[in-house]
Amino acid sequence: MRLKLETGDEVEAMRLIGSGQHPRPKCLLLHGNPRSIADWAELAPRLAGAADLAAIDLPGFGDSRRSDANPARMTLDHLADTAIAAADALDWRDPIILIGHSHGGAVAQAAAARHPQRVAGLVLIATLGSPTHLSYRALSLPGAAALARLVGRMFRCAPLRALNRLILRAVMSNIFRPEPVDAEQLERELSRFSLHPDILLAMVHVTWGGPSAQLLRSAPEIRCPTLFIHGSEDALVPSSCARAIHERIVSAHGRSRFHLVSGAGHMLITYQAAELASLISESFTADDQAVGNGRA
Image (cartoon, rainbow, N blue to C red; front, side, top):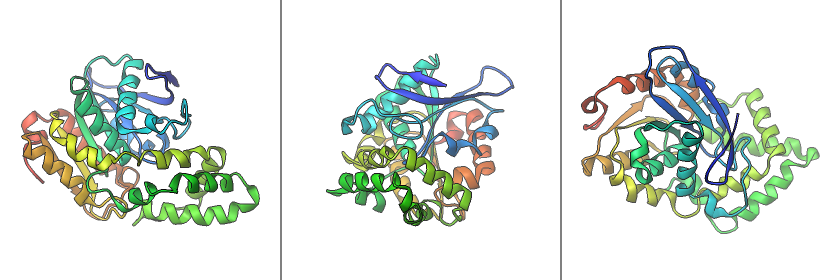
């Protein structure tokens, strides 16, 4: 479905309403950078028995085109407002749970800080944290946007498909490690970037403005129960970055719990989906004390 938002954005959305006892938590799923709704294919069905779910392609990603090229519309604050506007468009008026993966976790944190009355809880999976991890430092360097435009033109060029495949495999290997990048997955992503090379520029723009520093500053403002889930082998965003935010929330007397999944990498929403679903479903029914005052 398509959602027209009060922010002026129009986003692709998926809604999954399972059967079960009502009332049920309402959860909005927020993907990472440069990912899409498709990332929730393994996890979402496993949560449908415990919650009403919706997922959106954030502006600039997946099938959600940007309303304009202004990088200011790719900040954490604007994307956080977009997430809340999506909940409004779904007619979800009660406080919701935000489940964010990677950059989507950063958007969820910003939404909880900016709209505390609208966010009942956070589940942050392989989320951005502090300090800024290596790939985001590279993407925020001068010239990164120009390089993204150049690579985008390359992806549109069919004779360069073999070279583009090598480039994309190298990028995806870092995201998926220690899991392999299978051929079908690689071809699907290659086709996506060929059709929408503007995603590469969005990939750069979301790193501008110091999102990791913003997360550290705003962590004490997060007052809702928060569950961090991170892979011990995450090669993209080290678990220490997410733990720094968790500890900042706890030090401000917030309610946060940190769970480290042994052997998991950055894409644990795909490869450890069953374990994640169990952890998240338990958090829906736990009381505030169980959801988090302590450290893992």
